Image 1 (cartoon, rainbow, N blue to C red):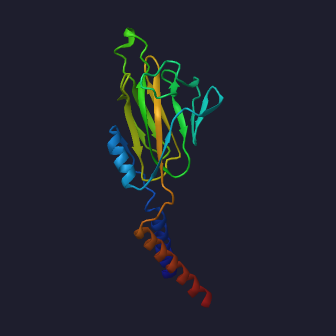
Image 2 (image 1 turned 180 degrees about the horizontal axis):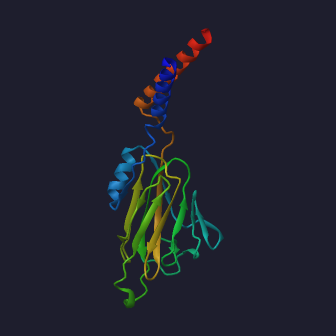
Image 3 (image 1 turned 30 degrees about the vertical axis):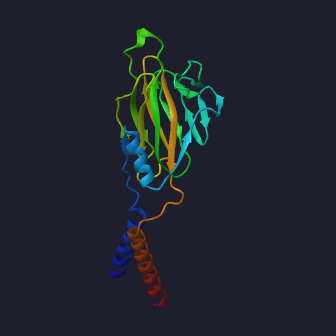
Length: 218
């Protein structure tokens, strides 16, 4: 009975060592400077994605760098045919209220983007883009709507997580068409376990090895 108790405690220690960093804690930012400070202080490498060089195998998928944007309902358009006033070049146009799924490369702990809305004339002068639910692969959901900005300015939305984000979905809303530009993500080169996690894991493995060694001698 005592051996079973010792083995149980050892396995619990090992599990604690492996999962002490597994709890997701994500934060949304609407201040770009605050998001950048958090990313830089965490030592992540930031990759900026323009939509100048994209690959669109069909109307519902757009690949920009290592990021894949997709929609199941309406086409995604990358273009500058509306004449973006601040010379940003091409941007991503998700038609109206469609949901977008975004697949990220590995070891991404943060991402952000600018949200605006196409201004077509005085009939739409009071239209303001909003960002609806943002659901992360970590299991967390940020429930909108969050107000964006109408041309010629943009609103920034950024997210940071304690564990890697592999994909997310979002719902940009506008009566005309929302615009997504200046997408960026932050990666950790090599995730480093905390010293406390290593200590727990090492203690558990040492205890397990000792238990097995004693059993072999009997």
